[in-house]
Image 1 (cartoon, rainbow over the protein chains, first blue to last red):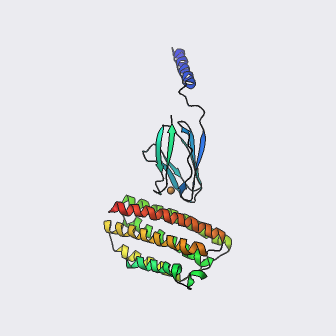
Image 2 (cartoon, each protein chain N blue to C red; image 1 turned 30 degrees about the horizontal axis):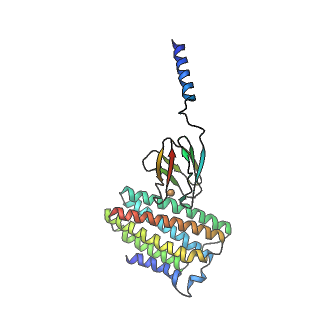
Image 3 (cartoon, each protein chain N blue to C red; image 1 turned 135 degrees about the vertical axis):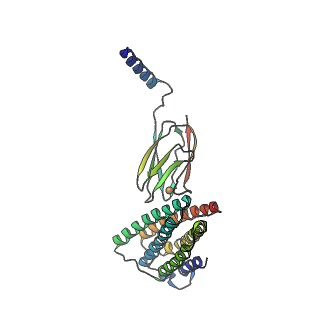
Length: 108
Length: 172
Ligand SMILES: [Cu+2]
């Protein structure tokens, strides 16, 4: 019984892994903050891709989704990774400097 | 209002007065003015953190403290590296005097009246410092690293000015 259960879950895991819905190879992109501005954002983003937010400033910033799906704290000279988990047009800003804004366009 | 004008007048002295200090500003004097300008905003923010209970105002004040401290830490590191001693001058003294007077004026206010007056002064003060940085301090700076730090300071002051303007509109 327990063996069967284990096999089933292994099979489920394997199927999930092979499923065509699983993301194709995820890409990593760097978005740099410099002189109180977000730098260019990559054009072709997909769900599963990773944004590395790199803060080159001496100031603390954040990269924050206006709809609340992420809120990345970025101390001076720090970087942080964000996995894109949903598709759509995501407007982000810095909570500490409201003039710092950008948009991520993520396809499924 | 009068005190804000005084601060503007202090900077106007460096910005526009023909033949006076303007062209004679040395890097040690410029460093002192820039450092003082940041310290003044930190002190004003600390007053707001003591007096205000409005979270959007205190969040703003915390950002002012954090950002201006960061620049001034870099400014001190730079003058040390360059072996320069910041030199007090008529402009930095006038700025400090005007800020002291403004602080006393704000100290007498409470609640929403304080918040409105603090934010209005932040708008005016950042605008004035922006103009001084852009019009006089940056063009007058000789050392490239000092100039670069002042340019970062200008971006920062411009961002804070926009932030303060939004906040002023929200408070109305
Ligand atoms: Cu920011």
